[in-house]
Length: 330
Image (cartoon, rainbow, N blue to C red; front, side, top):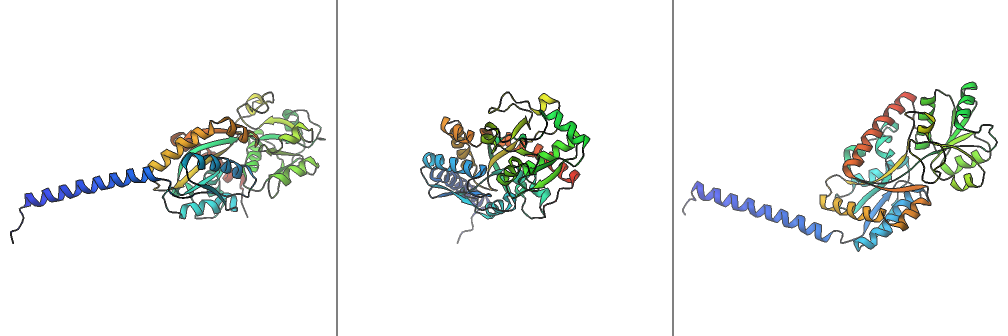
């Protein structure tokens, strides 16, 4: 048998490498052309009926039509979204398991929980999908006519006023602590198991105030709670005449609740790109704007680079706040 020359061996290796490259490119093109070929699962870390769940269901319904495959919502509530995030982290990176969650799952939870779940390390953010602002509301009988009077009252009687939240470590509590930090006030935190019971006790005058994520809208209009301010630097599209923190000179206390879409690391880039295109179109739909508006939310499409910047800034703010205020989730 004749031994191949070194030059012939090199030619063979180059040809094989080229062949593998073509195969890889073909496989990538094939994956892009065929995804999705089965049901896509959207994992949500909260119970049915809440803001995150409804947002996910609105997207799932529209994506089913856009992708030509069923897109279903799978609720995995618990640990402020950590259980759902863990489920997606363990999933195959094939585009068939997605996470819809508030950004706090990445920006606050690692500082609040002793957990191995670390979305910033193990998940890839695809895009932002929307936000809700928070609103400073009080019980109807609280004798203040605006936020400046409330701050004066809180400073005159430290600890006497109380604010209700949906639980320790949740965005409404973090908004409350930012407010206290910025205004130099001491207001007693009363945690509840969810935003609804917190709101009920404000309406029943069992708590003085709350930082509401939008569920109080009907009760504001009915006069069952008083709206003093938008807990944001931006005007509310729903209450454009209500003053914001920026209007009132309150600095470094704004905390909007952003929501986003994540996939497991190493999910094909073609899948993330397709999701970004389809979801961006969905969020621009008047019907989807109306559905989000019913939740007190705005559909806002943030592409990956912009969404990552938001996550980094929010993570820096919230990790420092949690450490400074010694917020611990039992």
